[in-house]
Amino acid sequence: MDIPLPPDADLPEQLLASKLGSRAAAQRAILAVSEELGLAADAPRSVSAALALTKLGADLDRIAKSLKWDEFEHYCAMAVSAAGYSVKRNVRMRKPTRQIDIVAESPTLVLSIDCKHWKRSAGEWGLAAPALAQVERTKMHAIASKTGKTKAYLPMLLTMVDNQVRVVEGVPIVPLQGLREFLASVSRFDEGLAIVTA
Image (cartoon, rainbow, N blue to C red; front, side, top):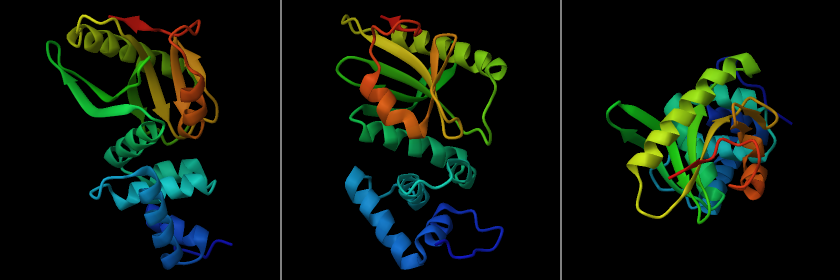
């Protein structure tokens, strides 16, 4: 049973304490998540608390609203890393200047991820422009990173507030709660995806 909190209690740690019934229980859950995922000592506690809340089935919309944009990106990076990918954050390119929030690599696929910290779900009409922009950034990164070995890059958007995977302009829009399942099943050979090879 959730203990009552003041209306302005939106920090992930406070939400977790409410969900678990005490600050001590919240602390134990944060430590357990940190140990389970091998999080760095300097990882924001708010991100660990948000991960613990997600595991408890808490309202993802409320969790998303409780995190700042940089905390949300960190949250996304840790979630992708926990799925077995090697992760780099804030990858920058020049001429023209562009940035990719997360580049995550497995032996078979490189994900080019734009973390969308939306407060509510977007309709398909509002997703086409961000999807196409992510395709362009992915192409730039693939060209700049060319090593002589052909790699498959998948541009994608990662969000907390959507409840199902959608594909817009060949770009998967993946909610965090569906990320692990998506990563376990996605392939460079899937039809309809905007795979970039370089």
